[in-house]
Image 1: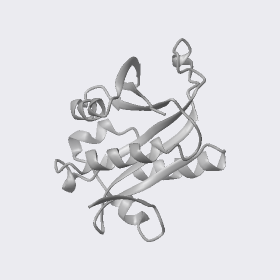
Image 2: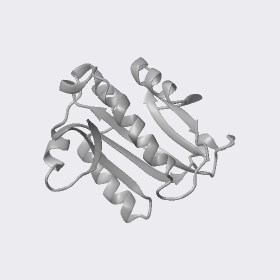
Image 3: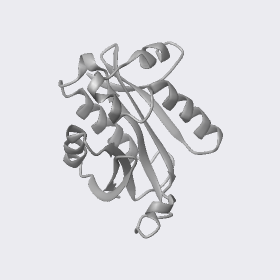
Length: 165
């Protein structure tokens, strides 16, 4: 069974040790360790960040993180969502040993269910970036209702999903 669990002193080393396949490394903007450090810094700055370990029973198979922040980057200035609060999926990865088994899809679904509870406040959107050459990510996110915005930063497409309330 797939579960999302808090990262603790007992599982942080397992999360840091997770790896994707060599050909997938360009799809990730950062490492799990850097994302975890970013979460600490964001939380310190008052921006809620939630990093979680993805478990299959008692085995760590992946890592995910989302934040709650305002969509205020200059490239969004002319968009309806500019200046609005959003849940942003910062990082998602499944270790190379556990890919192609549906665990990423199950974990993503659980994260979206958590986000839909709006744990940090109201938002109309969930957003994320994915590498433009990552067809599997595009297909996964589209299956959950994410739509490409046409905004590309550093070879990554911004995709957005409207939250129902």
